[in-house]
Every structure is written in structure tokens, then in C-alpha cells.
Image (cartoon, rainbow, N blue to C red):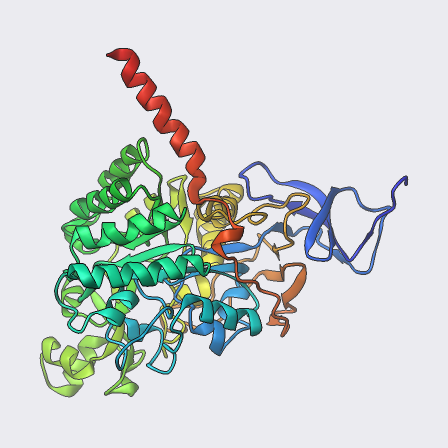
Length: 507
Ligand SMILES: [Zn+2]
């Protein structure tokens, strides 16, 4: 050999599925320090460690585009829920709910309480929180959104109304600072009271700032049921007026009356993508989960309670059965259980499959780690896509599924050097057995780790090996300044330019 390299680690002989969607190929992957140094036949090179990956898949680590891990990163920094299914980066602060920045006057109002109590909401600025994560790193990399609800609850005394001019300005100041501190964008949860009181102008005023800072707007839209079409149109309008890439979170259709309408919604989304940067993510289950709300209960065929402050022993039990035991109507049971969380069986498999199969859909777990009896998506999402929808049903090819979890989200969020197996990329890697990978977490046993994940590396270090976390915490905070603009804005602007040119030439 002319240039014998000495690698820290060689993953030898695996099927490399590189994240781009192209066909897998057999190769060795050589890692030096935190980077992938070379891919090919490395049999003549020496390595401090060589792992036989024959009959295994070597893929980029998965990016969980939709999480509520803001406090979990501090409470359980090894994050076994995520590393055990191959996740190496998480996007936090979704649905308008971020742990920072905050200056809450008291206990966090719902739904902010999904991720922590007043003590957890102790970071006045995003910078303080991200510095804390730098000093106390987690096993995975972190990308942080700033939540609309967190801003609202910090500056407004009453929340169930639109913000006035002064309040909007105060939120803008907080958001600007947060973006300067490294937040990569803005999230809304317009479906949730009291954020649902926010008018379009308020959201646009904030999203515009994030757009100017090359950020992204991720939205849990105002409605995912009967009024989903106006909600999609609103999300698109925010994107266009604020000139910001938009991500529609956990796209789904709630309630029997809306089952099948993903045909209609995906067509609208495709059309909108002609003129603006628009992305979606989804999770692979027919049940949703959030706080206990009567309107959602009414849309569902059955409901499981995930936590309840007044009746903690209700966790994991069926709402109808609880109501029977309490000797009351469902409405009263909901009242007596609240504040509480629930899993709602409210989606249709045909929609779930159609949305997952759409080429540009990314995968986001939406897991809620604080729940005492969580939705199984927390522990199972990524392994379920690979086991259920690649191997069992053949809905997706292996390469297409891996792209949805790696290179695609890395492009959408502008994560430089992540999401691909290529020389020079960070060594965020998952090694798994495509013949056995499957989620084990179910609605009745929701915290079982997935099977089939052999090894997970973050920045070149093992975080999950031998079926358990290793204790290593090499995760990094990925601040906006170090990232590309989201969703290839350059490409989008180009498309817009082409469209304008075309219009002009036809005039
Ligand atoms: Zn949400």
C-alpha cells in the first residue's frame, strides 16, 4: 500500500446503505476520530478495532425529526429510547413546546407540561440551555427549535387570546435572541389551546424573523381532522408570507370521517412544493398521543391513558373501562383524570402507509419520554419502519426508508456532514440486521427496546453496543450558525426564479 492508513475503527464487509437512496453496496467503512475517512476495500489497512459487519447493514445514524426530548436529554442523557433504535440526532422543541427560552410566571400551562414542571423551565435563554447541554452532553446530537407556546407563556399574562403588538414584539425579541444563540427555527402547535388563539399575523411576525435568520418553521397545524385542508393552506401561507421553509409535523388524518383523505392532502402538499420549500414527517402507527382532550376522545375508537396527575394508577388503562369503574360518563372521567395524557386510536392504516410511502416524507417519532406509559413510537418508530414497512409489507425499499431517516432530514435541516456514509462525514452510524430488525414496544408493553440494532456510533464513538447503552455521551449541539440553510433554500430560490422566468416569457 502506498498510503497505509491506520484507522481507529473499520466496519468490515457490511452492506453500505449510504442514505442517498442509491442501492446498497458491500464495502468496508474506515473511521478516524469522529469522521468517516475512507470507504472501500480496507483489508490491507490496520485498525485499532475491526468489526465484522458481514450480513449486516451499515447506514448513517437516524435523525429523529420530531421529538420532545428537551428535558429527557438532561434526565436520561444516554437516551436508550433513541439510541436503541439507531437514532443519532434529535430535533427538539417541536409543536410549539420548547424548554428554552422561558420566563414562566408559575407552573407551565398545558401543553408545556408535557415535557417538564416549573423547575425544568429554568433557562431564560436558549443559550443557557444549549451551554448546559454542551457541559453535560447527551449520547446524541441535538438540533433545537424555539417553541411559540414557550414564548407566549413567557410574555402573556392571559393566553387564550391573540397577542397584542407589545406582546408580539416581546416574543420577537426572545425569538431573535434564541436564533442568535443557535436555535435552528421556530415551532408552532396551533392545534393546542391556548396557542390556537394566535392569529395568522402573530405567527407570521415570528416566523418571518426565523426566515430572515435562515431558520425553519415546523408546525403542528391548527387541525388534522375535518379542517385539515384549511390548516395546510394556513401552514403554506405562513411559509410564503414569512419566506421560510415549512415542515408539517406528524402528518396524519384524524377521525373516521377523514380516513382516506391523505390522497387529497398529499396532492395539495405536492402542488405547494412547486412554489415553496415544504416538508413533512410522520410516524408509523395508527394511534396518536397527546394530552387528554375530549374532542380527540370523541374522534377515537378507543383511548389509553398514558399518565394522570390526580389518578396515577390510570396509566396504561382503557378510558372506557376507567369510566365504568368510576361509575361515570366518559366526559366526567376525562375531567377527573386531567391533567393527563392519552393514546388515541384514531388513524387509518391506508393513510399511514400512503403518507410513509410518499417519497419526501421523513420519519419523526413524536415520542413523549416523560409519559409513565408512553406511546410505543417512543421506543419503536425507526425499527418499525425498517421491520414492518420494509421487510414485512415491502411498502418501502431499504434504501428509500434509510434515506427518509438520514440524508433527507439532514438536507431539510441543513445538518452539515450528517445523514450520509461518505468520506469526510461525521461518523454517526448504525449497524443493523435487516433480517431481524423490528420494534418490540407495543401499546401494552411500550418501553421494550427494538431488536436487530447491533451498534450505534455518534461522532465516532459507540453509544449503543451489545444490546445496551455504553455510557458514552459524545453528542453535540448543532447550532444554527454551523449549519446550512434548511431545505436547500438555494435550490428553492432557483426553482422560483425559473418559474418567474417562465411566466415572463409567456407574457
Ligand atoms: Zn405535535
